[in-house]
Length: 166
Image 1: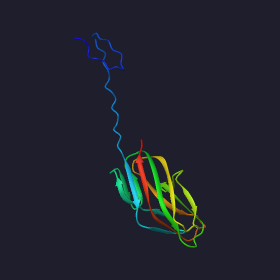
Image 2 (image 1 turned 90 degrees about the vertical axis):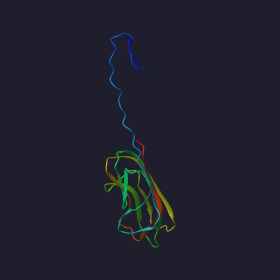
Image 3 (image 1 turned 45 degrees about the horizontal axis):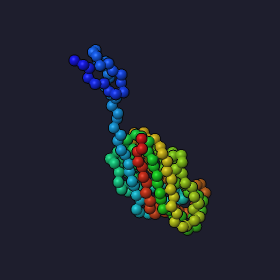
């Protein structure tokens, strides 16, 4: 009998003996992971005490866990992270404050926004990055007063978005 048809990308002889071909490689399935977190209640920070911004869950997959400001990524991969916070400095506050994303207590490059506490108007602070995370890595959004800061900062609301892109 003739040989079975060959895949178009492989050379083949139509006459026996037929060439054996290895099975096609199996590509792993891409498991989506995302989280859209919101902050609906005011959270106050008073210098010099730094702290973690807490978010409420809005919409997320089961492979991202949110608890007391800690965001745990159960699925490793490359993620796009973005945050937007509405902030307001307290009256008579001085110095600077930074807000950034951090991993295991270390700031993530490119996510830090530093601004003066002297402006008591409501401001929108935004930051983000594309980072690679390992399984069970924990991230958070952090408020960090400089050493000379006095006064307070209110985080009035905001959001944090994380989506796995690779």
